[in-house]
Length: 307
Length: 94
Image 1: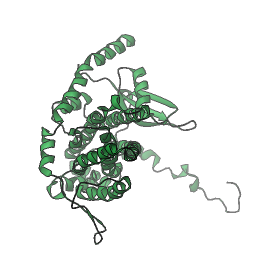
Image 2 (image 1 turned 180 degrees about the horizontal axis):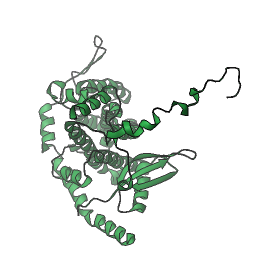
Image 3 (image 1 turned 90 degrees about the vertical axis):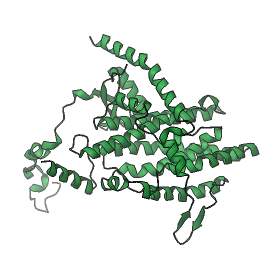
Image 4 (image 1 turned 135 degrees about the vertical axis):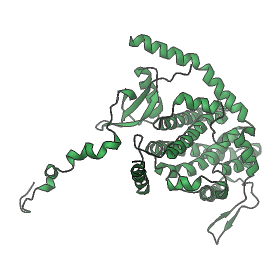
């Protein structure tokens, strides 16, 4: 019985058709999907914090309205993704608890601080740029609800990246101090952005299975290369230097050579010892705890009006 | 309090003349809140002119395991398709 179901599942995936919520699927596929989508959802939710840090200090009403819309989008993306995990049998409250108890991860990038307003621009340009590289192939993920959520998300990410780049172009036309802020933010975010694609292929044991299940379409190193090649001309147009002495065009490969991020730092940040891990989780926990009475009251109100 | 609010499925009509289409789900304490949350979550960029929400546990769905027998009755009735009938090529407008 299971063998026939498994064969049907493998055939569906191999033909590039989508797996839908009520289909039979191997337990390992279900678990991998829940873990991956939940981590992605947590990243969107935690990702509201670094930029949210600048909402009350945005330099103009225009920038404030844009930043608010962007942070609201991140919340939306988190909710689309939580909704996708629930089609696999996950529970929302359980996912939130796993996040605030540190039992499920989120992207290492959000554990770095946003020191100046230029960081808001660089996050849009580099962090959302890297996210787009990662996410566009996920629009063809084998799991239907995830793929559909990714299509919505990718449409909205384009606004995120462009607002960031425009913000930086504006600062680069400003005072020397403003230009220095852009360069400084670029220096700080470049390497963490390259880490967003995950460890080198040689250290990524799950990649082969994820590619076979068409959860993943490209390896970490392929996507990292694509991101570097896309970003170099953008940095030139902006007038900033990317902080990698090994970065140069390789005509033979038709691609850029570049240095490796500090993978020990990556492991430390993933392991909880990044500059802002504790702060991010504490803030999420506080918001959850302080919202408890609201959730309770809304439910009591609904019950009263239903009877 | 860690009780989940009920889950609602959300359907959006993109513009007049189109059907409502399923776009995802969300949690809300009641249907009114579900409608407001759906507006904020799924129509931030003018994606809709009308929204339906329905509690997920109110939906009855066919089971994928029995999809072959369930849809079999429509499989052998080729006479339901216009191409089943041969009409001479010189007969117009048919």
